[in-house]
Every structure is written in structure tokens, then in C-alpha cells.
Image 1 (cartoon, rainbow, N blue to C red):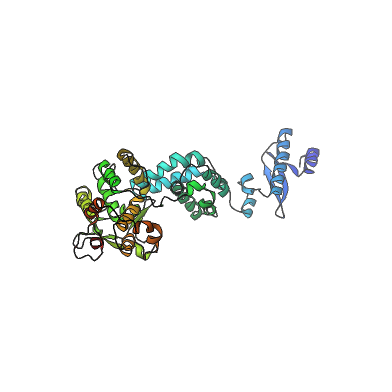
Image 2 (cartoon, one colour; image 1 turned 120 degrees about the vertical axis):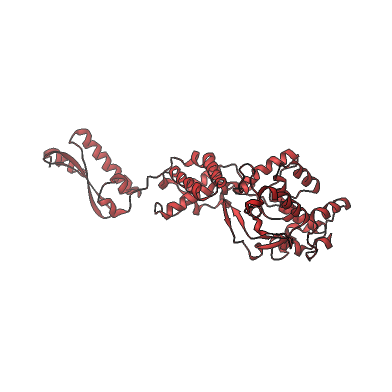
Length: 404
């Protein structure tokens, strides 16, 4: 011991220890019913002793508040292992960059670009230097509440972060994913929570203007969308092998969301075969020159000559097309609403429309499109509809030709 100085220090939970070649200061404190002793390799100077006293006081305060982390104060201590693993010092930015590297190797180039853009535009600015252990659900909620975005955009922004946190859970870096405790519907402003799926269809004049504003294979994408009622996640995943030219049928059995293609639909009716109507047939024939020889996806992003990363990437181009066409903006999902409402107003059987759209019965059709069922159309518009929606196969019993 260090003589009188050592005895005086010991009364404050500090012990001055002296070896043959070096000195140290030992701190004593109680933690979880155990007396703990940790040595600091410091000389017995007044400054070092005061530092040790302050450190012990800080530890006692942390223990009292319930946020003392043994390994954080004494990372090399053998005693620390008795109280759990060392704290994770990895940052959110590091995790996100690891995820981007994985995405670059395992996902399409366009999907990787989409993830990187989200990270660069939103996630790095907010969370780059944040330690993983400090990322909490309340902090995420506060950040999301300040985003000026629709709920669907927020979900896209959160995708890379969610992937990174799920990997951290799998690697035992954290016990749970804090995003699991974040409910967007509880924190997003009412206006931002408004769904993009409210029915607001385009009329035939607007459809013509939109298609006229398209360049190259863009026209084929959107003409096909208007003429099939397929969801954007469905037609960006459509492959040539799903086109049956003999029976004039299109198999809808794949979806692409957040850069990942899946073959399981939400419902049994979601996987379906739909009639190839005139507008869709013409679009697919025109699209052959662009992608059929590849034998894969029907529709590609013409900027990169590869499949669309997701419907978010497609929506950006869609907005530019509508601006060029001078048509009031509505989201791409309105092509699906346009398909349903137009057929119904022309007199098509609601059950037929339901099956074309992947619904098992007419409940959804009646609820969403009821006012179009009785609306009818003018004779000139009716003629245009006949040309655009006429069935290709005379064997089809699907009713469009009869209904119109």
C-alpha cells in the first residue's frame, strides 16, 4: 500500500497500490451484489488520484441510474464478462455500407442503385455516426415524423435500414430490431398516410396524351398497364415465358417489390391468367424488338437495359411523362383503377373484371368502382374502348366483347 496517502484514499473506495516497478490506483465499488475491484495503471499523483475519485463517483451515479455498462468502463476486465458482452461500437453507417456491399453482389444493379440513393439522400445524413446501441425506436419515430413524404416513400427509405438491423440481430449485435417497434400509421401525419390507391382514373383523352408523350419502349409499358389492370409490381416482373400467344393469355404469377422478385401472391386469386386484350397485345408485339431475344423480363428500364429496380424507380419516370403530356398527376397505380373503371362503365361483367384484377369475388369491385358500373359511356368513347379492350381470342368467354 502507499502509506498514509493510501490509507486516506482507501476511505473513499480508492486504493493506492505499488509494485516493484510500477504504481496503480484501484477502484472499489459494489455492483449487482458483488464487490468489484478495477486497477488503473496510473502513478500516485494528486491529479491521478482525483481522477480516480471522480471516475468512481461517475460509476456509482451510473449504477444508481441503472445505465452502468461494465464493459464500457473496463473493456479489458475479466470481471466485465460476468455482466454481459462488451458494448457494440459499430455505427449505423458502417452497417448500411455493409448492406450496400451485399446488395451489390446479390441484387440487380438497379436495385443496388436504389438502395444507395436512399442511403445517400436520407439515412447517412441522419444516422451515419450513430452507434448501433444508441439507435432506439423513439429516435426513429421522431425522425420519421419529420419526413415530408408519403407513407409508401417512407417504407422505401426504411428498407435498407431494416435490412441492416435485421442482419445485426442475426449477428447477435443487438437483441431486437428497433424498427419492429415503429408503427408508421401511428406517427405519420394524416395527409401523408393517405393511400395512393384511392380511385382517380384517367379518361381516354388523357390515356392518349400519356401514350403520345412516351419515348421508345416506355409506350409499351404503359399501354400494357392500361390494358391489363396489372399492378406495377406485377408487370415489372412479367417474363416472356408467361405470354401465351396461342390462347392469348398472360400468366400473372410473379411480383417484384423492393428489388426482390417473388412467386407467391397475397391471395390464391392473385396468381391468375388474364385475357390478352387488344391494347395489351399491340404493346407486347411492339415490345418484342427490345427484350424478347433475351428471354427474360418483358419490360426494362431503357436507361440501363435491365429490369426496373422497383415500382418507385418506375414512378419517377411516370411523373416526367405526365408533365410532358400536360396531364394532372396521379400515381401509376391509377392505370389499374383506369382499367377497372373503364371496363365497368362500358358494361363489362363485374365478376370478369374481378378475375382479371386478381380478386376472388366482386366485393372489392363493387366497393371501389360501384359508381362506374352504372355510369355508361358516350358513343365515341365506346368506340375507342372497343378498339383498345377488344379480346384477341375468339375462344375466350370472358365477356368483354359481348359486354361492349
